[in-house]
Image (cartoon, rainbow, N blue to C red; front, side):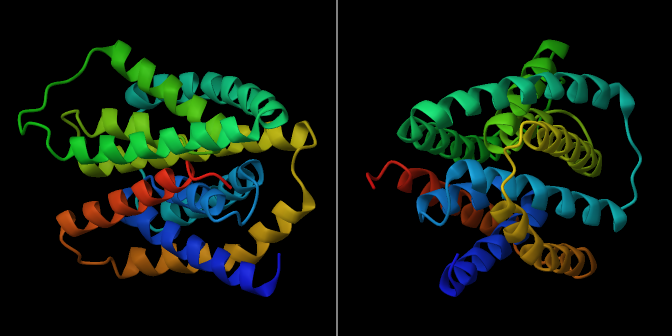
Length: 249
């Protein structure tokens, strides 16, 4: 990339990092979506960069927040997510080799759907009832599938967990652990198949200090924005990124 492209990339990484720490799940969606929408890099490579940077974000987050895992909840989440990552990676390999336009459209649909789900989530009833186990299984498998496809494992499991009668801190911890695992599994698949390009490694390396710095700074100095403002900003950014992928290039 040229210096101007790196500048744009740093802006996108900064936005994604801030949104991730505000919402708990938006890092890869925003980075992959906007990188694909602006033509900054191919979606497959943007997914690999987001995958590696998500590891940095997750590790940094856990270092600055106490972690008390709930294995009753985590075990089915993690197991089915791993299966989904494998399926998603296989589908990505086929799509990327046969129809790049199809890949762009699929990612656009995913991002727009995520924005809509996030908006609907905020309109849920105050009385929350636990969903049956099958709902958790489906959400975990779907999240793994999106993680394997685009390194964006968040939306299905985020939407499911935030509708359950669970403490917000427990939800965030479960999400961080799941995203770390799906990123690790996807990294293994990418490296094992020789699909990790040196350009993606270099791009990731130059962005690591920014992701680490933003995540650490927000842990010590959390932004005090009204939740409604945060939701509107993130949803608007997701919609912009998703819809722009439908514009012919």
